[in-house]
Amino acid sequence: DAGVTQSPTHLIKTRGQQVTLRCSPKSGHDTVSWYQQALGQGPQFIFQYYEEEERQRGNFPDRFSGHQFPNYSSELNVNALLLGDSALYLCASSAQGKETQYFGPGTRLLVL
Amino acid sequence: RKEVEQDPGPFNVPEGATVAFNCTYSNSASQSFFWYRQDCRKEPKLLMSVYSSGNEDGRFTAQLNRASQYISLLIRDSKLSDSATYLCVVIRKAAGNKLTFGGGTRVLVKP
Image 1: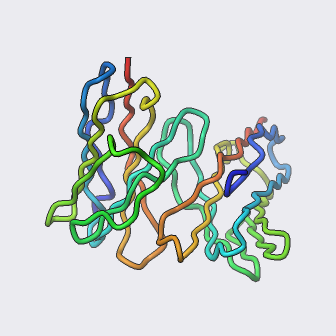
Image 2 (image 1 turned 90 degrees about the vertical axis):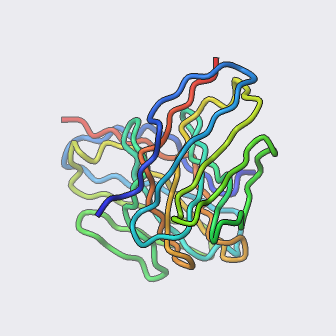
Image 3 (image 1 turned 180 degrees about the vertical axis):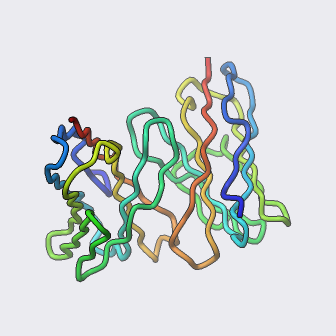
């Protein structure tokens, strides 16, 4: 049973560029949440997708957007990258209504 | 004030010793509580849920104190492999099922 997968594992971008990160949820899960974890801090909630719609959003600017596909996989897009966007981006999946979330290995983004 | 706060540590623990640390939360409407473990440069993994009556999983014991708004984690007979960052997580159902994390407590178990 495959767990949550994310791609790419690492990414280097320059300021002003755009990036797309991808996530495939654990089998049987239909809800995907994205988190940003800066170095030395706990993960911060970005948004959550269910039934191909954004259901909740954390305190992140509109430069952060996402999408969920019919197969429940998801993308996180960040436009106009800033140095401060450098972080580990974590995807977590869960079954709708269930509290337990399972995390993927993350994508480490470095913005230069 | 952050919604979930933890002592960042590090807690330096001799192998075989007991270590305990707390996490405080500011919103009394918080309803569900968890401890996650995160190894260096890895993703968080669920360690255990925290129930009102307290619960134990092997060498790990979690407690919830709603009156004082904190949860605790105690590790007995520490192993070198227990070295990690322990993340406290709360959920408020009114805010949906998003996880709100503390900053983590780093534990280093030494021989």
